[in-house]
Each structure stands twice: as C-alpha cells, then as structure tokens.
Length: 535
Image (cartoon, rainbow, N blue to C red; front, side):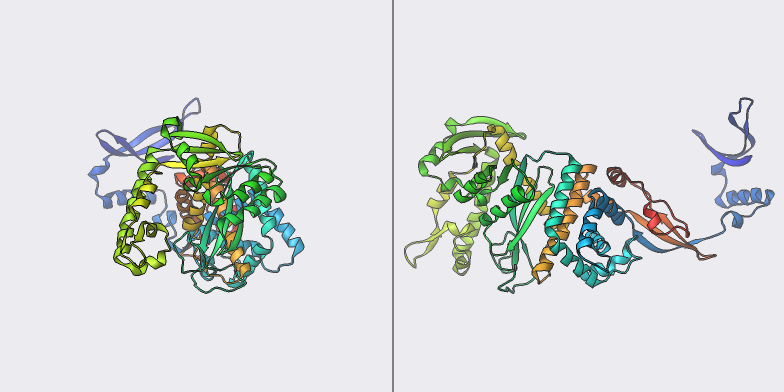
C-alpha cells in the first residue's frame, strides 16, 4: 500500500511516496518509491494539486474522501450531570430516594429537579426561576420537563425529609472515608435575605449579622464539620437567636441522632459560657473552646500572661509560648504568638482611625452602641467633649498576642492547640457556602422553602467537598473542570444527521474522572440516545 509521507530532518521536511510491506519475518517495513523534495519548496496550491492527482490516479475524488461539512447547532455541558449521577450513586441516594418515595407519592421527577438545582448552584448560582430556564444547557436534563413549580416542590420534599437526609449523608460519608470520628468542629454564622421585612412566626428576623447586614433579615446557621471539612449536620434558627444557645441541638444531633458516644467538640468563644461547658460534659464529650481572656479574674489573667512562666512550643510551623492553669475543674491554656500580637496591634490601629472619625461625627457614635471603634470613644463628663479613651487603648494593648483555650480534655497541650487551630475548617466550610455556592442572599419567604434551600446547598457542599478530598483539587479547579466538560451538537449539511462531539479532556478533568472512577463519555452518533452518553 502506497501513501504520502512527510519526513522531518534537521535540514528540513521532505515529501515522499512510500510503500508499506512485510518482510520475511512478517514485520511491517516501508520503502520510498518517489522522493518529491522539500515541502518548503512547494507553494500550498501545488501541494493541493499533488494530492488531487494522486486521488485521481486511484480513481477517487476529494469530495468522496470528505463528503460532508458540519454545522455546530448547540453546545451543552455534560460534566455536572455525569458527576452528580455518580455522586448520587456513591452516596447511595437512590436507596434514600426509594424510601422517600415509599412514604410519599410524587408524579413529578423530583430527583432530576434536585440535580438541576445542584448543578446550577455549582456552576453559576442563580434564582430558581433562572434555573428552570437553564435546564436546556445540561445534557441528560434538557430532555426532561422540569418547570419552576417542580423546583419549589422539591425544596418542600427536602424540608420534610431533612433529618433522614442528613443522617443518610453522614452515614455514607463515614463509610466512604473510612474514618473514626474523634473530633468535630462547631460554629455559627448568619445568612441574610434581600429583605428588611420581619414576620412574627418566621425564621426571618433581624439580629447580630456576621455579614455586616444589620438592616436585613436573616437566619442563624449552626454547622458541625469533621477534620476533612465533611459536613456532619446543621440546624437553622431564627435570625435573632444568640450563638451560645444553639449548641444544645448540636449535641443532641451527635449523641441521640448519630449515636456518637465519645468525641472532642471544638468551638469558638461564643460557646464558652459555663452552662454550655456543663452541658457538653453532661453529654460525656470533651470540649476545646476559646475563652475570653478579659472576662477571667484579674489575678488569673496576671498569671496567664506572665511570659516569664511560659514554655515554648511550635505548632503547624508557628512559634508559640504557653502557660497552663487549672481553674474551677477545667484547664486554661494561655498562648502567646508574636505574629498574632502584630495582627492585633494592626487591627486596633484601624479601629483607632475609625474612632477618630466618630469623634468628628458624633451622630454616628450612637449607632455603634459601644462596639468596635466606638468603645475607644469617651466623653469628659455628661455631655462633655468627645475624646479617645487612652486608658482603654492601653488596657487592650496589654492583651496583644494572647489567646486562652479552656478544655476538660486530658490530651497533651500540643494536641489541644492543634485541634483548636483546625477550627478554621468550619470557617472554610462557611466561606464555601457563602462565596462559592452563594447560599445568600436568600429570596424565599416561607420557613419550609428557606430550610429546603439550605438543605439543597448542604448537599451541593457535601458533593463538592467529596471531590476536593478525593481528587486533591482546589474548589475553583473542580468547578472550572466541570464547566469545561462540553459536548457539541453537530449537524451534517448533506443529510441533517445530528452528532454529539465531546471536547478534549484536560488534566483537571482527568483527575475528576479518576476520583469518581468513571470514563469520559464518547462521541455519539444519531442512533445513540443522550442517556447512553453517560453509560
């Protein structure tokens, strides 16, 4: 068999007519029939003529070799539905959905509606109305009728089945990651609404906002995560609920709902009140909680911050010194970090600038309620001139770099401090929910829809964090890889056949396929259905 071949050498590229054959041992060999010289010596039109002449000699034409041209009539994402269906399988959610279906009769395909909402939450968070329009963008969903009411009714199902779903996801995660749950992290955040209207019986209330949205209504979200940032459970409270009052429900979840007998609970200073410490101990759990140094007795403070009595310690590449005192049946561990001291001083300098601005604009001072910069502003007598409270500034500077941890655990100091430093895992989970998944602002009015929306985001976060752990990728890399998994719908001009052609696979996509143990879908001819693309 003869064919054209370009041979590249240091002196240039050479065009040859080559014949293939097998030698006496049956091995494939090539021999040059004609050498046509350097490719660079031929203008493009001459190369085209050479090709046409060779085709004519073989009794063929260019049109017979390339009989069709193609037109792209659509481009669709296959990545999200492919990944979600595998994750649905890995978390055994078909079994959970079957149990739900046994309790309730649904004519609609609510699992596909949930797929659409999660895909949209990961790809580009938008309203439920916009999600219903975007259905056309996803292969595997665009063939199904999903309207806006299906999405809302699916949120209602999620609310009604919230407890069983959270327990199911927790059990599946423990199996998938084969881990011993020995430490959990608990924290609280706020999720605001695009509304200022409160209703007496609604979760939507105004309260202390962690997003700086004091004028908007909100709900309070309490979240438990493990050391891999896997979500364990969550609860939603009225927007005016204090942080410290939420911890009892978290403990009940762990002990009664999830049957966790022994665990270390790590939390921030908002949970530190005595009743909470006693509550945690009553559940036979250990706690590691930040203590407010300034709230301790003065004699105790003096002992804790006496750096001459501190011991040196390095944790996660950061140098500390620490001292430890037993107080009222618990351990108080005070640490000092020069890095933290510089940070505290810098933050106070910013507050000082704001305090000076408040002095020149007293009308804003009343709105601050002695919080933040306002606590550094005082007045000379009743109705006197405003000035900086230098005594307060000096008193606060005394505590720069210090932090106190309280615990009932018998673990070593290094283990305790390491676990407390890992509390940022739950803060990272909050950032993912708020920034990546844009859980807020929320636009729902009824309690049922509010809770349903949060649960949907909880599932999306669970799936995304699974991919982060298994693929070893950053969240932005995962989403970018899923976004770029495209399938082009191509129609041939001669007979109008529709063909699906997959985009090329990059390194990050390969990591996701490997983590999910799936192969990329193949190109599809018109006889293959869309669902077969995902087989």
